[in-house]
Amino acid sequence: MTTTTRFRWQLLAITLSALFLAAPARAIVTTGTPTALHSETDSDDPETDRQAVSREIERFRSSSISLGQAMAIAEARHAGATTADVSFDGASGVPVYRVKTVHNDRIWRHTINAATGEFVGGEAALPVTELDAEDRSNLTALGSIRHRLADAVRVAERAASGKAISGGLVRDRGRLNFAIVVISGDDLKEVILEPPGARTR
Image 1 (cartoon, one colour):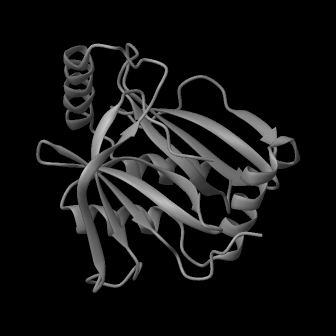
Image 2 (cartoon, rainbow, N blue to C red):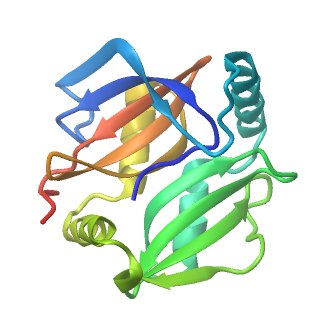
């Protein structure tokens, strides 16, 4: 399961190899070729993409509910649920957060109003057994580690000095990582966090 956004964003990748320390001691900042996150709304016109990203950021900044609050709201729907993926969507009429949680061997999909924190529409559930092997492996690893996506969001926001707009799971060389996209000033930064003990099978 990977983090997705609605637009192609130029990102500064930050790798924190010492996750969840109060002040990460080993942070590697990559300033070379930026990473691009793709979506179905990508266009061939960079100016159109830039304007779309600017609108999305403005809608995010004017929202009353933070990404962390949206995760907490979704997790409270089912006691013991854990967030696996969350993203802000400001392209529709009402800005929302799309949150996927894991509970009782099911993936629950929630849509939360970014202004009020209320659920929009019904919730949908998919049995974990219906996911592909990589996603099942990631979720198994997520269940075996102590840290949660909410912890990673807090660390990423401190490390990048900004507010998270999306987060999820990625796998790199057999390890499960959290990938958090943070708005910092006028920049978008991707923070990759590796929780201890997250080697996937």
